[in-house]
Image (cartoon, rainbow, N blue to C red; front, side, top):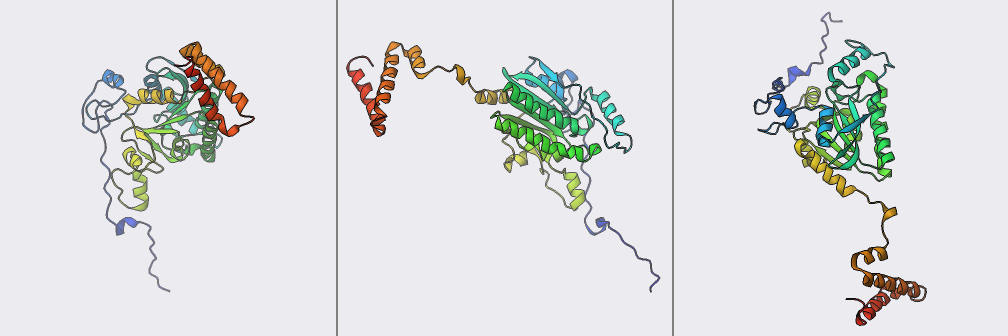
Length: 345
């Protein structure tokens, strides 16, 4: 046998062109990374954290988004007491409970999603809004539970559901328990469909991983904010895995709209008006209190239309048993006869 040592390498970078790193964006939260304009904090709040110069959408907290959607009319947060447990006793650089506690202190939130009851443009609804600042908006057992409860609450109240996603995917610290939330949230959306209540999904930057592979892709109306990354895996991960250069618009909202994955791209400042319009279109009247045809015609045009309705009902009642195929003709003849007598104009 040869004494020459065997060398094995799995580094494919030696056989392909080097992929340059993506340029880093400014870290200043008041400086636009796209046009480098500067803003004061009060200007950012008044403009829903959207650059007035180029329209770049900055990250926004879940509670600030609820304030924007409600138009200052107020909202009521529910299930604030839910907190994540540590069934796997997961430890990476630090224990999972410590990491969750730091995220709560940083954001003031108990979890990565806030569920609230509110009105958008005067239309009552339930909203589940994710916050990327809480552990990357990752979906764990509490996030899945709150979204499922939001569906139940919408069905209980008979109102639509608004879901705003901003997430890196399932929470790895909870393992398979986090993956189970994908099925749990899908079941909740299916129950909304069975109740014939609309679901409006807003995809904010970024919406990736298990969130995009579950409830975020199941809205009856699916809108995205400009420039939002919407993809199962991010372009950096795909490039590192495949060693191939992706197009610059890969996974962006504009590309997803072109491919038919979303319904429209809506500026954040226009979201309340757009969602309010959709809610008004989908509003269902109370059929139990709807007037009958005779009542409606009598109230609208007086006794003459009421008599016409009575004549139509009388003709249909006496004609159907004998001549079911001539109902329309008999009704027309009855109306013509009353018109000749001067009872109908």
